[in-house]
Each structure stands twice: as structure tokens, then as C-alpha cells.
Image (cartoon, rainbow, N blue to C red; front, side, top):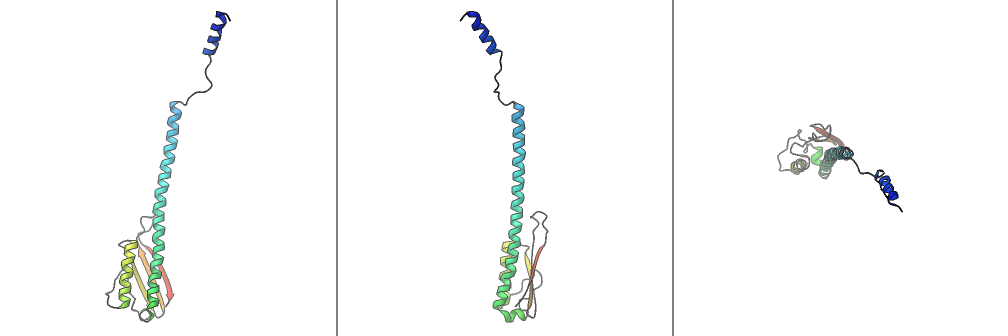
Length: 155
């Protein structure tokens, strides 16, 4: 090969650009921005899911507490039918009787599980008894300050 052909070959390869190039700084910044917005959205959804999960747990516990006192009343049907379990909303009766002690324990466990503002009401007329459980659900998405569950059964 002559010296002229070597110089021509070097010029022809030096003038060409490689078809494979790296990412520009703008492309990297745009991809980081898109990724960060996606991660922030995921974090917000996670926080909402946790709030709603807690709200769902409290609703389930409200139902469980209502049926817990129903079971205690079924174990003592004479007192239940005679109004021994009746109480006003959020009023805790004096202990001393089986019915009074059942209501005191029921309200204590309810406040432990549903918060300090949780309360309940029992109203028996003859064999028909209604239990109402109330608690604060303001932490849930669109939750109400007073969440109420009420159930009626025959003792």
C-alpha cells in the first residue's frame, strides 16, 4: 500500500461518526423526572391504602364488639330480658352485677381497640335487644367523625 492510500483511509474513517451514541444529559434528566413522579404516586397510594385498611379493620372490630356483648347477654338471658344490660350511649354502668360487669368489660375492650372515644349503647325491650357501637373514623379517606354500627337480635 502506498502512503497516499493510507492517508485516504484514515481521513475516510475519521470523518464518520459512530452510529452508537450515549444518552444526553436532557434525556437522563427527563427519565429521572418521570421516575420520581411515578415513585411519589406510588408512595401516595400506599399511604391511602394504609388509612383505608385501618378504617376497614375498625369497622370489622365494631361488628365483632356488637356480637361479643350479644354473646354475653345470651349467657345471662334473664338479666338481658329484664333490662339489666341497658345503658345510655357512652354511659358505663356501675359494676356489682354480672350484667354491669359485662358492660364495663365490653366498653373497656372497645375503647382499647377502637380508640378512647369509642362507646356503645344497649337497649333491650323484652327479648329484642339492639346494640349500637360508635367510634371515630376520621382518619379514613372521607371518613366520618362518628361511625355507627347497630345490630338487633332476639335473646
